[in-house]
Length: 199
Image 1 (cartoon, rainbow, N blue to C red):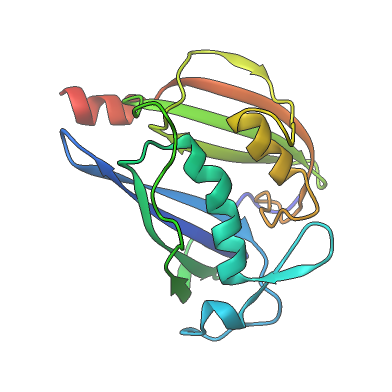
Image 2 (image 1 turned 180 degrees about the horizontal axis):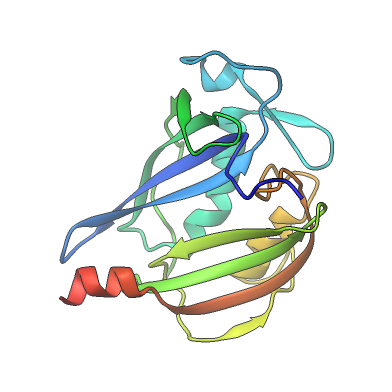
C-alpha cells in the first residue's frame, strides 16, 4: 500500500463564520489533476480525474463538492473559496497551483452549528486503505458510530456518501485509490475545538 500522505493534488475549502471565539476550519480532499498544471493556472484550464474515468474542470469539481457539503453547514458559515495544491511526492510539502471562488458560498443547513462536534466518514479504498472525510462543527449532532449507507435520495450524510461512491467522485484516499465501499459514520466531540471554545 502507498504511503499515507496527501495528494498528489488537494482541493482545499476555507470555511469561515464561527463566533465566540471567531474561528475557521479547512476542509481538504485529495484528488488527481490531469497532466501537470502550472502554478497560477486558471481553474477553468485544469482537468480533475473522476472515479468513473471522465474528467471535469477544477471550478466545476469544486462547486459540485461544495453543493453537497454546504448542506451540512448553517447559513452563517461560508466557504470563501477553494485552492488547489500539489504535493511534493513522499512529503507534506505542497505548492500552490490554482484558486477560485465558489458560485454559492454560504451553507444551507436548517440547524445551527453544533459547537466542537466532529463527523468522520470512512470508506474502503481500492488499494485497501481508508478514505477519511472529517467535517467540523456542522449542523449535525450525536455521539454515535453507525454503518455508512450511501443513498442518492437520502438525508445529508447518505447523500454525500452517494456522491463519494459515484462515477462523478474525484476524492482519493491517501493511498491514491478511489473508494470501493462505504464503512462508518462516526460522530462525537472534537476535543481540540472544545478546549479552544470553552477554556
